Structure formats: structure tokens, C-alpha cells
Image 1 (tube, one colour):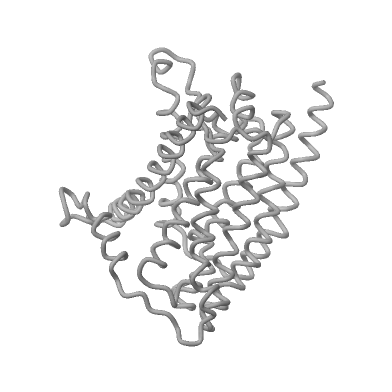
Image 2 (tube, helix red, strand yellow):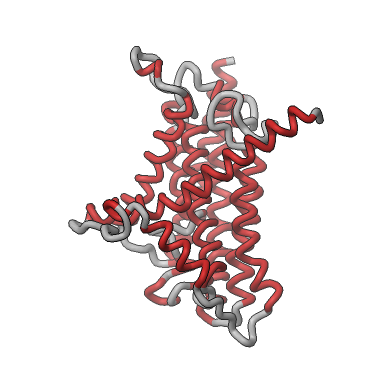
Length: 325
């Protein structure tokens, strides 16, 4: 690799990591404000103008907070579990194209790469629950294992239709294949299954079983504090960004906006960010609206509804492709 190419890769990595860190910091503020207004209250207001410096104050607090570990914990695994989650999330961002021609790695199997790393990220929760030597954490880890197995299958199957329509697992090719129409119009069932599976995959309400505060205190994160708890926090919100980016890329045309003047003057990066944060707003809306599912309902929904729906969508899409061709 030429020196100029190495510099360009370094610049791209710096931009992507900086955007991700800024996202993690301020999407928490965004969530607190959105849910606050939905519940007729203000959210953060005191630290900075309208509470804009609250994320920085929270980060400083977590960084300097005492790091407590159970005396009977499996220390090496307890240490490494949060790092697995963060590294898996950052690794996934490497293949996401934020506009045409801009991604750290333009892999032919970018979609499969993200699915693989999202599974690896779930090991962070499972290992943290096991290593903490706490019944609450252990139950949270077990719930996460079952939840990931159930909804990872549905998520992967829902994307098979997208790969059939685009003829590729490359994320840039998938966006380019939507130049005439977005796949949300031709793959509505796949979009529905993927969105629900994405919410379950990121352990968000109403599928936040691994950290259910009402019965498991905080689940897998019960024994974590300080910077290690902050790493779990970062992994969760980075995972939300990745799933939202996949929704934008696979179903909403990625960085392509409406072909209407003067909307055609808006840069592709802006359209991508609008779509990503539109779906993140949907995450918050659901959290403020829906109660948590029971665990048997969660499993039943995954195995009895979403996996059969995704399989039926694959068969239907394949038949339509045969007819069109």
C-alpha cells in the first residue's frame, strides 16, 4: 500500500471513529430529551445550554468513578467482556458506506461481515453475565444467548431477499441497486422482520430482557461500574447506529434522496444521517410507548412468527425474480 493510501485510510478511520464517539455521547442526550418531551418533562437542562454539556459530564463521571469488581468474579473474562462489545461495534462501522465511495473497507461480503460481528458482540453480554458470579447477571447472560439465537436467524433470513434483489452482499452495491426504487416498497415483510429483529438484537425496549431492571436489577451489567459500564453503554448505542445504518442502506436507499429539485442539491451524507437518526428516533419512540414483553412471548414471537415470515419472504422473492427474468 502506498504512503498516500495509508494516510487516506488513517483519515477515514479517524473520521468514522470520531463520528461514532460523538454519536454515542449525544444520542444519549437526544434520547433523554425525546423521551422527556414525550412524557411532558424537560430532560437534561442544567449542565450547559438546555443541558448540551450533560453527555460530557456523564462521561467524566463514568471515567473517574470507582471500578468495583465482585471478589469471586472470573477476573480475566470480567475485564475483557466490555472490550469485546466495543470492538465488535467499531469493527462493524468499518464497512458502512456513509456516502458513495466513502467506507474504510468496501467488502464484497459487507452485509455478512456485520451480521457476524453483531453475533460476536453478543458474546460480551453472555461472558459478562457468566463472569460476574451473580445470579442476576447470569440470568441476563442466558437470556441474551437465547434472544440472540432467536432473532439473529430472523435478521439474517430477512436480508436474503435484499441480496436476491441486489445480486450482492456488498453494501454499496445494495444502495446502487435502489436507484429506481427503495427496497422497502418491494420487501416490506423483510423490512418489518429486520426492524423488530434489530430492536431485539440491540436489547432495546420492548426486548430489553438481558438487562430487565424490574426483575434482574440490571441483568448482565449489575456488577459493572465506572468505565467498564461506560463501555457497555457505548457498545449498545454504537449497535443502534449500526442497525439504523443497515435499515437506511438496505431498505431506504442509503445516501440517495428523492429525485426532486431542490432536494437533489442536498449532499448524500446528509440524507444518510437523516435516515439513520430517523430510525434512532423510532427506537426512542418505541421505548416511550411500549411495555416490556414477557420472555415466553419474546421467544414465541421469534420462532413462531418472524422466522416463518422471513422464510416465506425468501421463497416469494425468489419466485418473483424467476418470473421477472
